[in-house]
Image (cartoon, rainbow, N blue to C red; front, side):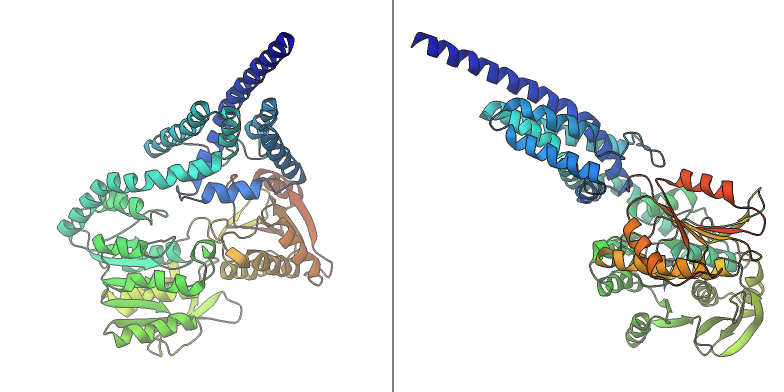
Length: 533
């Protein structure tokens, strides 16, 4: 009996010792895992749920990651009866998912004040989970669970911190609101699924010289970015402030309009961008339409039937509606391209005001029509605005054309990620070069919800018809792009498109530089930061 008791106590001590080894391993694994998923949270604008969604992608994107994830789960369950099994889970969590780096190649972790706050909240939540295990009994199991669920806990931290961040940012919003009231510019609000930045820049170009104008820089289009743009860039004497306004969900644009109300509202386009978050394009229309509520003048791109219907509705509410089109010469403002897409005819209320206007590569006629409508609504004489169409400024990374040192042409469309923009870019590629090799480099399009696979499959087919080579970057849309390319007929040279898969953008750039020369052309269509697989 004594021997049996002694053996039981010895095994119990060993069991507890192994449990504490697992607790330590789980805690240590949380550190590299936390750095990975905090970086993802930062890149995804601290939206709760983003880390969990990306974790599901990363752990299933390759057979190696999938097997490693399953091993981690099995070992976590085994921890219930054999505590040391949790060390396997901790090792997998610390090292993986493979491909998602700690530091980041294109989007390094930046220890901003907001990230530091989130990191502290996340660490406290992790400690609470492990602490419950220590006090309640299953310490090893909960330590392993805490390590496995780091993405979920980071998302929970984002949900906890978001209200606090809103309160902290309110001071800057109040300052921006006061500055707007003091300077008193005419505010032009620009939104849309795509085309916002280009249209904003065209508006500033067409208005500048007639009235003093300031536009929000880059893509400062959320609450914090817009407040910062006002506080740092809105100078005394500014007559027109052009504000780009973006949204990830209903109510966000309405919130922006409460303290930065536009007198002129612009809605450039509706498409499946951010469909993953909105669910339906109808919800996108309603969310974007919030920009029109405070505005007296509303500019709408009516080639989209949904925006044409919205134009009728808003006109019925007493708004002054400007209908912009690239197809209907009788629209309020029309920029109708010719057959080759390089020149256009500009009309106002059906009257031609400029003929044979050059359309530089990357200029979308609908965006230009919207910008011209805004200029006219602000009192810029039609002949003055028309005279400024010939020297439109290029918009960085939006179908921007440059010549490489090796002599081939580069179409940089890396900031576009929507089906309509991709089709326009492929049409531009078809007009580019002198009969040489045409190459498309792309990771495909993202945030398209349930339509993402189908839209990328269509993109792959369209690329196969337009290009000699397709270079697929990363794994996020690889299968869909390859399936689309395989289903398409021969490309421009009468041969099937040649497909190359690379892990990341630098490898694609190296591939292009090694193979292209004078007379060739490459289109870089979209780019994804490296927190995407």
